[in-house]
Amino acid sequence: MGGSGGAAPLTVDEMARDAIALIRTLGFEQVDLFGFSLGGFVAQDIALKAPDLVRKLILTGTGPAGGKDIDKVWAVSEPLIQRGASEGKDPKFFLFFTSSDTGRQAAEDFLGRLQERKVNRDNEATPEAFQRQLQAIEAWGRQSPQNLGSIRIPVLVANGDQDVMVPTENSHDLARRIPNAQLVIYEDAGHGGIFQNHADFVSKALVFLTD
Image 1 (spheres, helix red, strand yellow):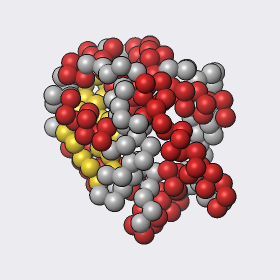
Image 2: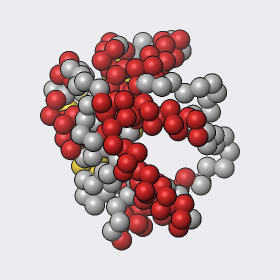
Image 3: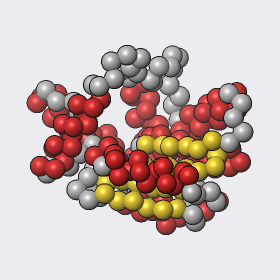
């Protein structure tokens, strides 16, 4: 994924252990973590496995282990991916945004911004890496709940109110179960709610990280 080589891990547990090893190898004593979607699963697991390593945590478009319908992500995503292919649109147009006029315009704006970077762009995910990600997501959705109450650090949770990939109910669940959590829910927004409302989200994230 991204600029990395090798094979993608098969589980969130493996991804978290790899990330912890990397952080420590780089010599960081403590870090702030931001996790979106699958990255949010990994960020939670890092905070649980190595609590002293994480100062603050931002979780967006994500949910807890065993969360509502997380294991159904492919059943939800596949028809929208097929629709994107049939209409010649990036699947994120349908996966990340609502079908309202506001959502569609936000999708166009977001996809346009993705093209602004011309050099050092991330590599496209290979089909094998995508399948491994999918397996990891579905396994996370079937996993037993974790003790999120043991996460004592400040946590910012954000999502759109109509996330179809990781249902928004999971964001509310995270905020209820993590003692020191703040919750931001954007109206008329989906899985990509933080991208649709990027200016507001960045402002809130900066305040959260600097407080």
